[in-house]
Length: 308
Image 1 (cartoon, helix red, strand yellow):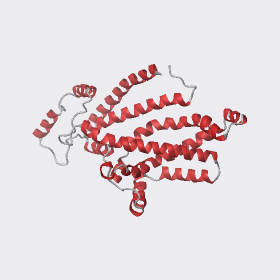
Image 2: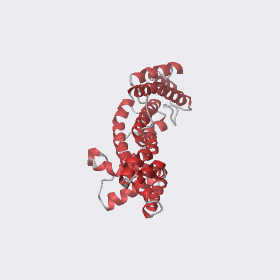
Image 3: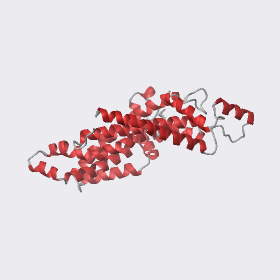
Image 4: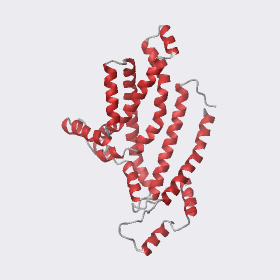
């Protein structure tokens, strides 16, 4: 296991190098630039700006300089936010998005697997129909509709939870409503995956053998069915985690959450090269590490998998 882990961690280096290289040149080759304005900038000012940020150097030299900065984990200054570095923007927003994302994903996994178990064990009965209907709603209704609706009923009418701001204003209660909203589509996917996977495992020969031995149904489900049935769910959790952390821009806007989503969108609109690259690097690291954790969890769920 240790050798496998070290080998996978070392494999991150060429993967990240490819991602950084492709992203760097694709952004630079796109038309426009971070200093483009509706009103033309005087040529002298434009040349001074390009010189200040070393953008008047050849593209290859810019690329090598950026690689050196990445090795030192210096993501550079933001081209649009004055006197602020990309590291500072990410350091401020990423912990907030991570808190919201982890809470949402844990909520989605717990509720989705539970609903999937009930739905599979009660197939073609009313709990199954209710679970499938809720999952369809979760997949179909967009977050920019779900968020305001929950704010209206839970926040304004019932006054159970605060509707906006963040922990610094309302404490941990402020996390609940945006976490529920953000987790809903992931809960729906996990519930459907769990249901389909559990139904498939329930028809397996080893499950029939376990039942023939006289084991209790609860033992069969928790000890034998779930281990095999959770593999597709674990596979989904890798990209889901990275997506739920960095793709929460709608939730951040609706609930006034100071996360990393809004700066990411603004960086694309403003063509803030360094901020775009910084977000891409962080997103890639989160995705790769999440997939690594998923691969390791496989070994605990399925004894047939070994890491050598």
